[in-house]
Image (cartoon, rainbow, N blue to C red; front, side):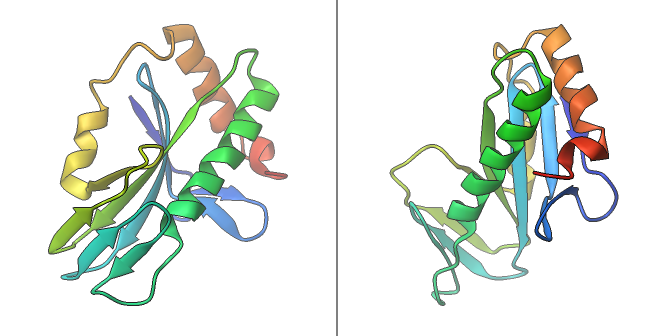
Length: 144
């Protein structure tokens, strides 16, 4: 698996939005959205996240939207369908409780992200190279 994050701001999209990281490998393409909540408890439901029982945050919905934008960019330049799995990664939390019934957004603590590395069977080696090649070019993202 290859991790792609261009500069310190991730992969830039239009509208002052960015994708924190893209993970590209035989197991597929993962759009990773990292959230830092040092020493906080995090609850994740189907469409919202609560930090220390606070106001709901739209992290899940935004992760899906970012992944959909990545799909549009990659499929514009690749000659095959590209599925992008949204991933929410929480950093520095004391507790992570996931009660979501949907499985379209993966949710991890930072130490669990390594579980994505051994995945395979989604992309062939030449497809991984093509996706990575497209993902590295800033111009591809300029209208995303």
